[in-house]
Image 1 (cartoon, rainbow, N blue to C red):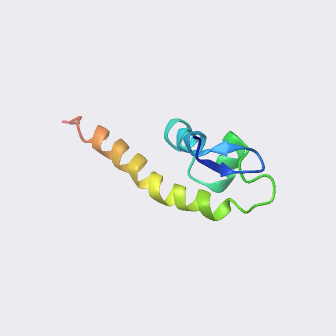
Image 2: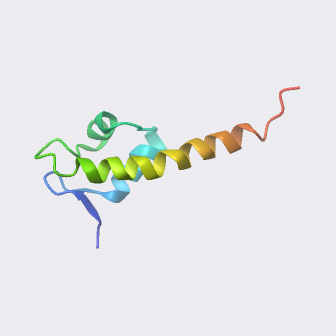
Length: 73
């Protein structure tokens, strides 16, 4: 069973996560552009914002930990 985030456009959680992690989407506008979510009635905006709030720190931490593996001196 798919976890549908946006019923108007039938966008699931996996698509939102992919936009965040693969395309570095960090705003609702970028989620709209990459997935089409939140382009209908708008009821999904709070859910998408909560996903962004939860996932963006993971992306930032992943990038930071990858960068810290390389010494510049």
